[in-house]
Amino acid sequence: MGKCTSIAVIGLGLIGGSILKKLQNTGYNLIGVSRSQKTIDKATEEGLISTGSTDISVIKDADIVFICTPINKTIPILIEVAKIAKKDAIITDVASLKGLIMDFVNTSHDPIRFIGGHPMAGTEQSGIDASFPELFKGAKWVLTPSNWTTEDDIKTLETVINQLEARTVLAEPQQHDKAVALISHMPLFISQSIYSLVKNYPDRDTGELAMQLAASGFRDMTRLAATNPELASDMLIENRTNVLNTVRELVKEASLLEKQLAENEEKFTENCEDIASSRKNMYSPDGRNIYKKIR
Ligand code: NAP
Image (cartoon, rainbow, N blue to C red; front, side):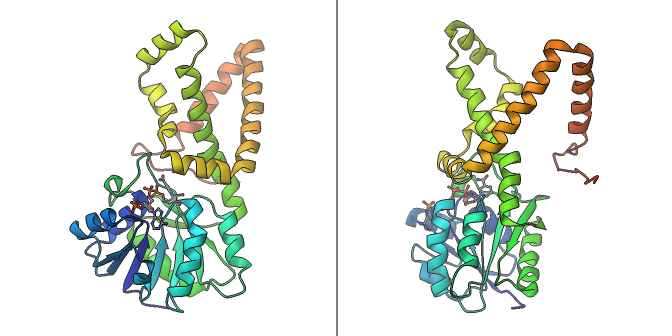
């Protein structure tokens, strides 16, 4: 496709709003579509878009269309976009799960020029007011090419993603969904479990005291439990099989540590040291993932 001058974003929430805020005043013609007129008015007032509507047909001249709606709206919206968009437009999304969407695109009778996407950045907030231009700074952005994707399309999309200050990583959709179950969805589930356990602790007096004393450790361990509930339930339900598999693996890992703690103090202490040193080396002081593949 080559040159991209016009970008449409559908779903102006945390992710869609942050894309627009970063691309604002960079020379693109920016088009916004959202569910409510209030969100469109807000994006227009903030100068984020030159054209905005609740009617999806305004995306018709865009060179790239980002679908940034909740996961379960992505396929229905993609069907609409594929009918309306220019033949050479690149369509992409940001949904946290890729398997179902890519299966749909790859088994479509008509070509859909779609590249799956998932920015590995977010917060527990939602909506356009929570969006900010630096959200993707230094983040990885997974791309899952479809059967219809060309090298040129990947390069064009990569250029925009790099302008968002993110770095692309190509992945297979099914493997992506297993990996995010491990690092994102299972931790969310565990975070919810930890919060519920303490909040509803059977020994009420101890539970109350714990809630009052809880400081940064509990806050960090339960940050994910405050995730936008629509997104949380979408992710956990849609990726249920992978999430449940990783929860089972976690229980096995915890049982090993439990056995060591009960029976082998020396081994347990050694393990504490190994885990702490490996975890310290995984992130830079400013919070970036600096993990290096060793195999
Ligand atoms: P969000 O803040 O709730 O934003 C979703 C936006 O979609 C809302 O602004 C809403 O519009 C709009 N919307 C809902 N239904 C729509 C429809 N039928 N047509 C047009 N717009 C519609 O959610 P988000 O966190 O940005 O998540 C969006 C996507 O990003 C999800 O697929 C999620 O998996 C993915 N993602 C999220 C994170 C994260 O940490 N949050 C990270 C990576 C990827 P109104 O404001 O107009 O009601």
